[in-house]
Length: 332
Ligand SMILES: [Zn+2]
Image 1: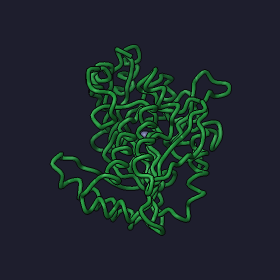
Image 2: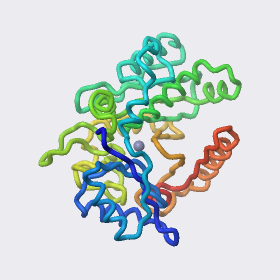
Image 3: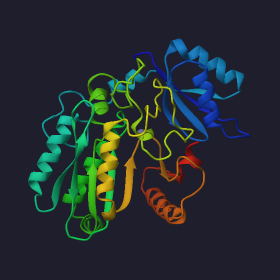
Image 4: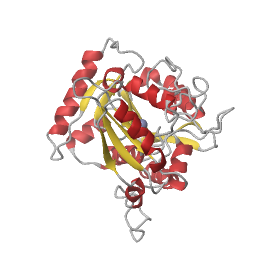
């Protein structure tokens, strides 16, 4: 991994980069890459030095501006966690934790707040790990919010955000947070892709997919977020090549983690009003649909919520700008 670098490829200034054309050409070009970020304006790709020349030839041929974003990805990985001397015994939000520590955190929360928390067990992963979550409910009849995080294995900050949210909902004394916490039922699954997440901690920091082998291929896993039984493989963002990062799987719901999530959510759908999925990185609020650029009936409502979020974030002192729109229109 030590020599991998990441590059930004921007669309031509006079016309946006066509992501689908770009992606299919890259795939036809027969070199593997690691897609970090894509939008209709630019893509970020991690490449090995051996394959860099192919990418440069390609971008030159299509006059696509190419620039180095990170010259050595391993150096970032090496610097990600604080030094080992940091106290590892208490869970917190200054470093990233493996699945076992997140489970201990959940157990401690369940023990500390037994009146308002319930354990959720949504199912079992391909490698036999439990997919756990927590329900926080202060009273009967609240509208329900479901949050799923770390469906993509390497997106560690999403489960850190989910555990932070669990902690805030239970312990914050801020009036607005208390109101949010106590007037909604929260269903939070911090790590959905438990096998992939474990693999990123133990073997390959950049792993994204599940860990289920693919029949007839040496490549492992599917992109669980492309594996739902809803317009499966109809999006430009899903690949049928098992070696791709966005492989949709051999069939819908082939990945047990995705099937378990869908079954669980279906079982409580009458109680749910909002479903959120946390991803990284990008500052964007994506709403349905991903498979067509047509918009759902409640698009205006969704846009109103997204705008309110984006405007609120702008007020914070971090210069963070969130864009928003439907997945198909924002991403492809
Ligand atoms: Zn993701």
